[in-house]
Length: 84
Image: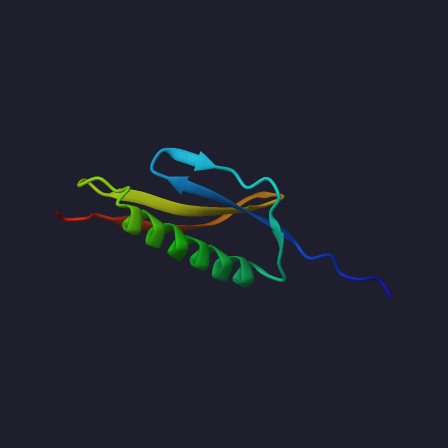
């Protein structure tokens, strides 16, 4: 019996204009699993940005851009603005 290969998803992180590509990726069972992983990663990014106050008064864009071997499949975005 031949095992099914799971698709590999890559989670590139965007902080404003800066993009950090994911070179390794994760093998996940489905696009829905990739969506859940992107949501968790985005929540961690947002929490850290707010804690460290790395967001200017105009706001900041944080995103997890998910791609597979064929190209982009989804983007989870979060924009935050801190009032002093």
